[in-house]
Amino acid sequence: MDKKVTIKDLIQKCNAKLIQGDENLPFENLCKDTRELMPGQIYLGIQGEKFNGSTLYKEALEKGAIACILENVELNYEILKKYPNATIVLAENTVKLLQDMAKYKRSLYNIPVVAITGSVGKTSTKDMVASVLTQKYKVLKTKGNYNNEIGLPLTVLSLKNEEAMVLEMGMNSFGEISVLTDIAKPDIAVITNIGTAHIGMLGSRENILKAKMEILEGLKPNGTVVINYDNDLLKKWYEREKDKYIVITYGLQKGSDILGENIELKENRSYCEAKINSKIYSVNIPVGGEHFVQNSLCALAVATALNIPIEDAIKGIAKFELTKKRMEIRKSKIGATVINDSYNANYDSVKAALDYLEKLPNKRKIAVLGDMLELGEYSKKLHEDVGEVVALNKINLLICVGNEAKNIAKKAEEKGMEKESIFLCNTNDEAIKILNENLNCDDAVLLKASNSLNFTQICEEIC
Image (cartoon, rainbow, N blue to C red; front, side, top):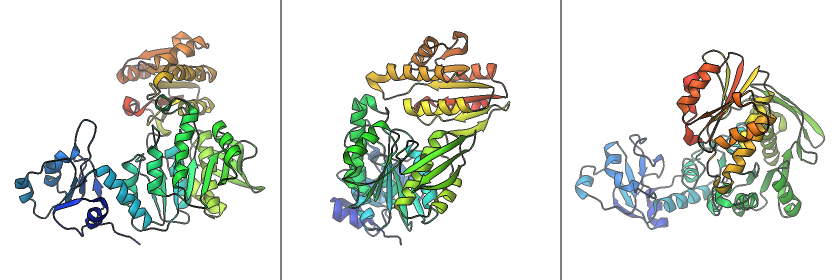
């Protein structure tokens, strides 16, 4: 049942001030970007480091916003007179208001909430878990990667008549997940792995573990923790803390509660046998890659926690659909296999993608790799580590784009890759030119870099 949060709630709970309009207006259908705003939406003006979005209230009203929630702005009352039916609210802090209202709305619903964090695989795991939960519930899940201090509360505030939520939680510093889990109050907290993403901000994998484990601060009493038993730091955490929580482990290592065995990997599908309480289940996954086997095991762990029959959960896995730009399989104009995994990149996700590429049956393997960002003082070392993986997996052609990616090329050559098979590029256009000159119909091409490098441009040009 849809439980409305209204403008009146903002006024009462967040000390917001109604300038004009309807206090009974539902606080929903929010938009924080005037470029994307549609008629009938509520515009949320957010104060950024360099710009105050609240100053754009005129543009929002002109585009049909029915309300504007603003902060730190001088209002032009001549403009407001032109829109007498628009609701205008002034807040002390629109982001804090957004979070407080999301926390309040969450408190109105007694439904299962699954929160997912980790260095790699949050989005694909979220999609897999949501697909499994749809076998029992009507599910609301995080759209795309709306996983930060603004995106998560926007997701929660869009809750209407759904019966479960699957929420992704991202971070790049201490305290961020603490805020998110306080809003979400999860019944199940999933930690997929502890890798090197954002290590430049946090300084060590141990600190990344500490930041990710903030998710447990909001865990409901008698809630369940689901962890990847294959991850070294999570395994150590489990051995230390297992008596304090209800924990379900998953992975490929012996000792996992949900154990994956007899794995088969193909270009666009995977298979494993899941051993659960001594019973063996056949699991077919409609996407290739060992990391998606891990995701499916995680989804089975969540199903176990929510008493969803394993047979039903397996049906949900079979219906899983991958988010765009994440291991998206396409064909080039000449028929080559193109793996567009260009949404983001860190050492762990690049290694997983390269391992997948190496196992494909295609005659040649081509890796187009770009800079991995937010690695700080660890950047050079982690790019070199990727170069080692390239050489170890015997990639036939390596195309590196960006200044940091040159360290991938240098290390791959040091580890035995022929210099003639390595190309250094400053731009995507240079990479596209090299691909057009070298690509054969039976090749497999991996595109992998941080999102800001826009490797989707490369994909669109060759496909």
